[in-house]
Image (tube, rainbow over all chains, first blue to last red; front, side):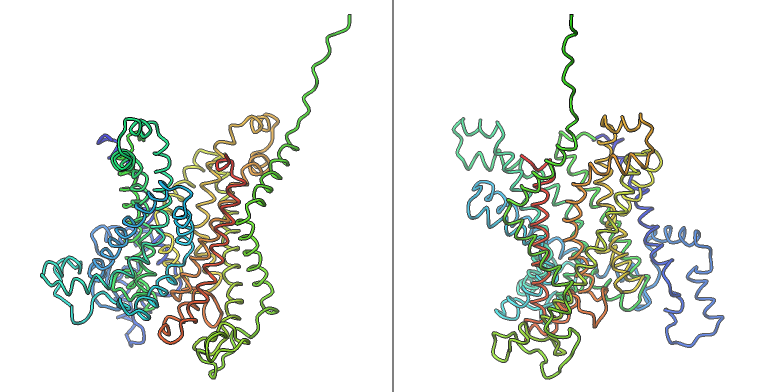
Length: 335
Length: 303
């Protein structure tokens, strides 16, 4: 893709991002209930103090000015103050973000590491028992409600077999001073292997739960595209040349078969964002998703608003990246 | 000299053919035993929901602290009149699952009906009228696609507050985008076909062409997509209820029942397990049945 095309695509993103901000703004602005009253709660304040607070929040201005302020502030990373934490919303979000990113990345790795081998095997042994099991498994994978699957895993591995912890991110005894905020990385950087295993054992069940729907989808995509590739002339030709089956499969077929898998994985990474709220709630994972759910019940609206905007913008950018990746991997797609 | 015999008039066979395609598709679907069985399961769930007051053994909200976390019938301490056991307030889990089906199925159906109606109108207008209508609708679609579904719904629920109608609104606000895109795509192709051209030449109005000429011919992919989406909507509703943002207690909904049981997984696994199983069964049945529908009715999936 030429630089011009890339710039054009980036420019096309702007109206979408603006529209997304408008909706997030409207969600808050049009909601019944006065944010100032919510902030004040049951404290006693004079009408002057209330008016001052209203002015500080910009609530006395006309609505289009408030939207303009909201967008310009958001671009500068200023989302106001969290009612509950009495700190800037951006700081609170930044603090919780590494836990969510770490969980999402491990879920992505789990999904890819399960889906690709299973999908390839199912394609090579088409109509075998394994293929059918994989088909049934992928159907189950998209039909299982994530919150329930998480609880089942918890009951089996944490309560019944007691081989994995029930919830949280790391045991009290293994807590370390964070460096990057990613515990799996930090424990290794600190050379604390037992803490690393502790963190790993905490992340396994949430990551499997979060990655399950993605695993199901990627497995199907891999199977279909592998079957497609195995029918191609160049694979028959490679076999006719007398290359070993293994070499044909891994050197020739797999490389091309994985293009759709990678593209779909990139798109589905965005869908992990929504799953985070559920999985973090089930497993008491101290990430952004759980913070949002808690904030809703605390009526901590500035945080909810900022987080919804953050999720949406991330989602748009991830989809954009997925699109670019797809274009880069598929020379046939000219945009 | 007699004139050469007139060529036999071509009898228009189109209506008859269309009917036979429909019947053939229906027969294809009926021959798919797994899909048929799943459709039967879905129908049974619907009947269970509709007839809940007659089939539920107990009042779903009747608490009995002596039956607190009573196990299912086949475990020691269980009894068959409370077949799936009781929850932490001593309410009969089976009855609550039966009543919970009403919430899941009602919300699923309502959201899909509202979203599909809006999606069809917006998609037809966008694909047939083109121009600024298309630009505006497509921009709105792009923006709504910029939100992860659950987060959009959670954001709306946080602002609107929980409740049955708010869930339907929160989900329908985004769901219509999906039928809209399908309808727009199909309309773009169909509007160029000769019979639409003919209707235009005969002076048919835009609305007549969109609703009477185009819509009937693109309806089957829309129906197929709607049934597939129904499964998603049911899971989303259950997720919202699980988070406490859905239907409020004491109304039984499957998602909130799973959430209720979370605190007791050590001593009473059945409280969370059975409602979740109900969600899985219904969603799985809808998924399998709708795949059967797709294979039978969508020409792109026919050999």
